[in-house]
Length: 392
View 1 (tube, rainbow, N blue to C red):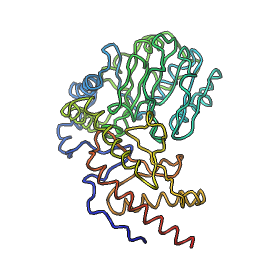
View 2: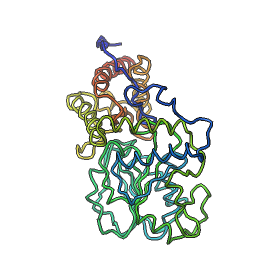
View 3: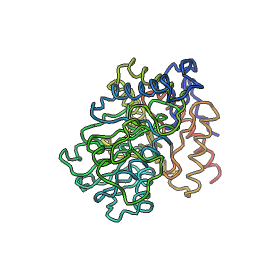
């Protein structure tokens, strides 16, 4: 082992997982004491709680009044799948993928729905595909922020205002931390367990009037599972977007989401949430700019994520290792930090290049990020010494 000194201070909250994410500062289980457990979500009290989530979400995010907001099963995955299976097939598709989740949607479109008129634009981890090639008169499917690659689209300028197709956006690690141009987006999905640190299993699905029109005028060629159906008799099932969820939600999770939304309002709303997350990226990037061994997986500063901050390892000794040893070294860094109680769950995604992933969403305190960074240097020094000793 090395003589690199162990840092004196630890983060007050060591939870840097990218989902489920850290709870909001000051959270305790008392936040859930008003949850109507044991009651039906169809009862007046249950429905009112679900409607409160929808109303507070609209207010915090600034979602237009004519957009529909629904709470749906199966987290962000369920929300995306509902959109893909219900809306696609009416026209050609441009699908974008630069990380694992985008790749998953491409697979669904090409191998499950088997839509032949699909153009796929791909890029490697840390990069974006050429957005100028996208034809918005086709349906466009993309992630706003690549959770596993640390790359986000810089803005919505590449999306035409007078587009003929629908834009279907998986925004699960973007909403509440990045500005969303709602007028450029027709379908937006996310899950509670991402930026606001809510509990899992529930997804959010936002539909523009154009998306609703598609649902009411287009019938897919394939059968739709009951859990995906959003229309009946050619009309939108309006109750889905008024708190009448398709299947039973957890009222404890609902109460937790209400608490997170109230916290969002108390700190200054969306503008403050974005500032908190951007501040976390700034702290990490300032450290990366001086690091001799770590780098942001995204070279282009304009597309670096402020939530899922992905760190690559650029040290010369690391580059000489085999692929298996690189993966082992990265996992050893993660294990050391976990053992010290400094940082939990910060390993890179399994399909991404070996490295680290530090969640910088709005519920993470910048002070905790700043205390974490010296520990990353310490853990790297330990692992470097261990692997160099083996090679000697």
